[in-house]
Image (cartoon, rainbow, N blue to C red):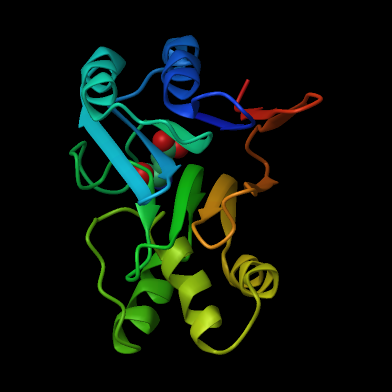
Length: 194
Ligand code: GLU
């Protein structure tokens, strides 16, 4: 079981995400990471081991963005490592995904995507998701349609939170079997596995 957390609002997202990941530590994990959309683009910070490792890296990065997603990983596909820690992204570094669960047909999907020229940087089942979205975006689809097409192709259990750097005011969420809750506020919204 892993943890997903997300924040969109007016406050600095990084500290809220890390605090959320600390709250989800009880679920067990082997690595953790966040991505925050900064003015300069998406900034990814991932660490193996305890969330405190991430705390230090996030403080050092001094992120001021107000949108982000985070994850504590319990490895099912691919060893615990920084490369396999979430969030995962597509080739262009514009779509970022955190995932709880297992994509059962990841091998077939990865083979198809690699054949289409996608370059994977992790051994996870999760990484097929951002590449699959990118595959449909390259096909001319809108982000919404690309996501829907990607979801039609994946089998398994999942809670997914997705950021698209071209839409810095949006976090996409979707789930099948795995838990995910949405906290709706006046000027800010949260997502979490618990
Ligand atoms: N199957 C994914 C992985 O191994 C997600 C595991 C989890 O739920 O933390 O990265």
